[in-house]
Length: 428
Image (cartoon, rainbow, N blue to C red; front, side, top):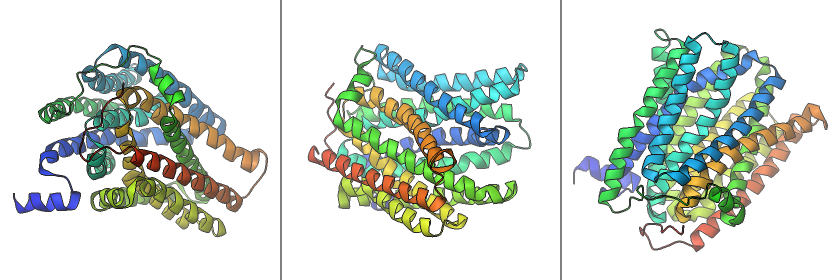
């Protein structure tokens, strides 16, 4: 064993037989996140030309389209094998971005296309990562996922840094429309990575991609409403979107006094700090937290920390403190909470992984966005006229509930823990 390889294993706790799969998976999610971060600045620039009502409408449309998209996805998941389903999702999204590019070039009203693009890229931002983790969670046991998922997930943060850098490099030579072509090409690059991973997992006798799912296109919805674990995961995500909404609303209000260039600089610093911290935590801490302290602590750690910081922030809601809390919340979510959430899916069957998971990750998530943004509006100017400190205290209460749901999910997961490194069995 080389010294470099030995150092890698000591730091990541990934065993020699697992390195190739983990590294290719790291590259896979890197490409996926970079492909999203390429179009994210284009999407985020659009709402500045809209009013509050128009933006609320786009969030509502995003929820509706998300629900329709996961329903259509479930139909296809029932009709074809997993080996075709996973790459097919990325080919589909690549073709839609190509279609938007052609529509822009054809001279169709840019304002109309911009709203379509905003909604569709928002659906894409959750869907492609959800399918990635559906694919990965069937390949690893519970014990393996605790050691490996944190490292794999750091690929998303590296991609989140690389995407904007690529945009800056291309900005002087490419139009906004042409950026859609780059995203489309990046998504197609995932196809050989999927093929390589299939071969690796086949050698390890853990690959289930040749299998098919239940032919009933509604089985994913049925699993969702009949399984406490899946309802719990949905509640966990729903409460997470609430915390995101409370902080987003506070941040938006406090940034109103700053110029556009100052906002860009501040938010850019948040992005950079978040992704660097996520990489450090993901490599050096995530796997150790999950294995030493267990899933209840891993899932509830960030919620309880954020809840306490929200209470402190309510006493002095200064913009620099809000942005610092955003860095803590987002890096903690990306490095600790998100991998832990994906570990939960190693204990469910294929139906839940491939059919129910996108319902939770996409439709429930976007539904949470819509619900909480209206709740915050009612707490503020819409009805109660509460100030920022009172609103943040309510957000802290939501965070505490979020943490207790994490404890419940973590305990339920560990009570059903199989022997270490035994691949999770499908119950479908």
